Image (cartoon, rainbow, N blue to C red; front, side):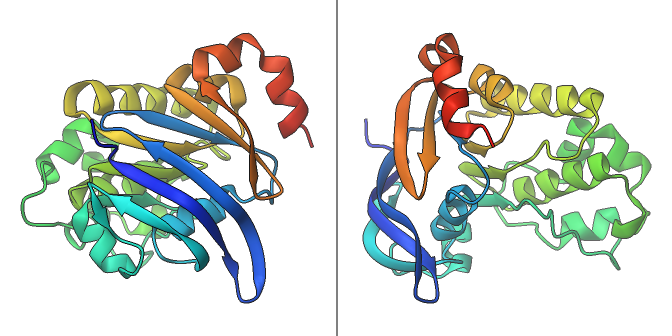
Length: 233
C-alpha cells in the first residue's frame, strides 16, 4: 500500500542554517507516528518543513502519491495536511465559533456540530473570544480548527505542553477516537515519551537533526531507558 506521506532525504532549516539532515520517513494511512527528542533537535523544524514553512535545502516530499516538494503551504493544506502548531495561534479577537468557521473547507468530514460533539467545552464557550480561553480550551480549539480544514494527516506539535493531567487524558482519548472512528493519520511531536509511545504505532527519535532510533512504539516502550538516554536534557 502506498504511504500517505513520504519524506525522502530531507535537509531543511532556516536561512543558511541546516537543522534537519538527510531525514527519510513515511506515514501510512491511519497510522500514528511519534517524533521524540530533546528541545532543539529538529522536531518542530520537521513539522514546519512538511507544511512548507521551513527552508528546504534538499530532498523530496510526496503526499497521497503526489509530489508536493514545491507546493506552498496553502496548497498542501488543501490536499489534506492539517497542522496544529505548538503556539496554537488562536485568533484572539475572534470568537471560538469564528475561529472554527474561518477554517471551514468544503468537503470536510467535520462541521461545527461535529467539533462541538468532540469538544463540548467549545460549544459552551462558542461566543468567547480566543484570548478568553484556558490553555486546554485553546488547544481544543486549535485541533478543532485543523479538523475543519478536512485533513487526512494531522500534524500535532507538542499538544500536551503546559496542560493539566486531566486535560491531557481528555485529549489522548480524543486522538484515539479520531483514529478509531475516522481513520486519521497522525504525526505527534511530544516530550512525554511513555505517553506518546502508548498512543502511537511507530516512533522515531531525533538528535542533532538526524534520526537515531526508529521502530515500533511497543518495542521502544519496552526499552524505554534507551529512549530516555536520547531525550534526557
